[in-house]
Image (cartoon, rainbow, N blue to C red):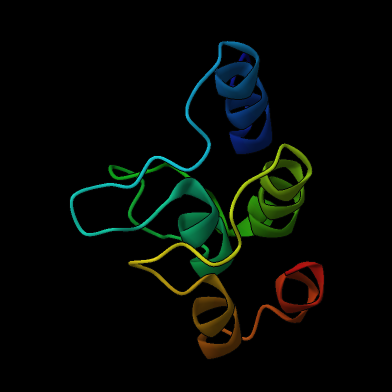
Length: 88
């Protein structure tokens, strides 16, 4: 269908040199959004189904699992994403 997965988008952005730890206005980072499995596709665009894969790709690329203004682990715990908790 020509659609690009969330993981593919993350890989493209990483290959283009995107700042992996860049924080949005509210302090969340791409890893925060992946760990929380963001449902607001207008913000970061991380799909629920790809939260673990995106989290793993971001961690492998050096994402900070403990950004100062956000809490990746808490978000993964709150939403019951056990695989993401283990990855973090």
